[in-house]
Length: 578
Image (cartoon, rainbow, N blue to C red; front, side):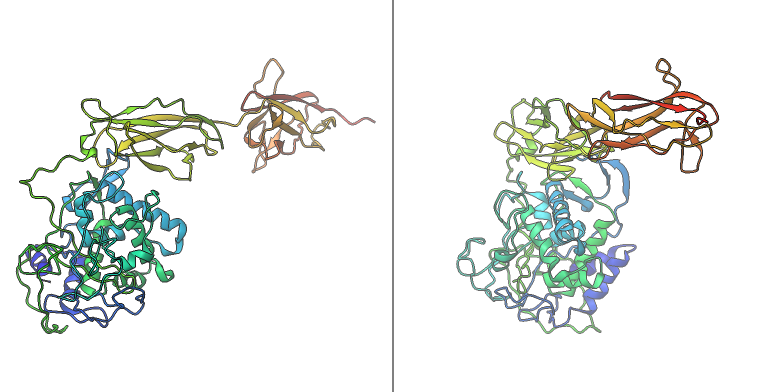
């Protein structure tokens, strides 16, 4: 397309992906696709081989406008700096590498859900980001509220056959507000008939809203993962993208952004993302409204061997969506953002000045148990007034296997009318010690609040031997019986309790003995202290075999557990009776 050629020829160098995109844009299209002289897919083109036939468009994608801007020629360079929002390393670079915080969170959350529900698909979140970029400019640069819903619907033009495919209304205007013809809707640009079966609830509010970036991203992920695809296989990823929009030009544009995002991105506040300016649906320089797009008459398709001459880059906004190929989406880039001459009232997120603790209790738990207290914070303005409808992200940081209920290490909660957000319950893992829970505002570069949480070892208050057999041995021999004890806590079995065992000098001197009975390590060497011991699920601990040196006498073995339980066992080394 003109926009593509103009940008690439001005650069001093180009990436392999961008070069491939140029070659593909000028010389090829997907099998069965006819194109006009702008490289757009013409109405009536045949769908890809694996396209579903469930959509109202009968598998044809029609004239499918989307943002054609390519990523910068210089890829972002990751740096070790940490995000002030998440505390994790991010890349810091050019504006195009920035993705609005809530939109980025939606992509990553969708990837995590697909990793659990369809692990064989291997969906990368960067693919959702690439599609979101060309479909809606990342939801108009992240103009979404705290729940991830766009402040105004993102609608494509009427699919009335006038320059696009003809798709009569399928939803009585329920999704797109048009009772006569269908329109593409939302950040990922689904047509209503596709959303009806492909829609998902990605933010857990009980609704499937195509204008919600969490719902739309999850739906797009499931859509791409259909037919048991493995997106780590390039041919299958290509098929999935072509099924989303059956155009090789679209495929190469998406792949260009995918490669760019894979090399590094960074989080930017909601509403501050960069907006694309070039559309496949309009090359006149005009700026048509999505609801009343400018139309053009397709000319004869260009042949692969003689690519059309590039024109000056278009500055038009996308004007038209595509119908879905049997459930494929019908993307249309969004309308232009509000004019700078018309001030936009600040979003709740933009009014947040800081977070305050909201009476969080002491965060302690026993290994494997739940924490009694929950982390709670309050979002406040500069005037210390509560701010509602703000997304707060809680992140578990540190060497720990503790999680929030549900098994996640990150949870996002929207503040209520009092400005308070409470994290899900914390569940301790097996690792003991301290870790941090960090609370930050999604979409703002603000300092967060850190909370220290402690996981204590499982305790035992009593140890008893499971046998009364005397433990005896001849000098230089080995003990016939192994020491076995059982741990309890408040009368109940104490399973998975940490313990140590040491051969001590005396009851008054519990330092390690240098003679008498001993254990052997894996190499057969003498050791007299055992660490990292743990009782089994029944509270039982069986020690390794004991050996004796040539020293006769009575010796002591001390066993200690977390929680204060201790037991001293006598060991006798004496010559055998004649």
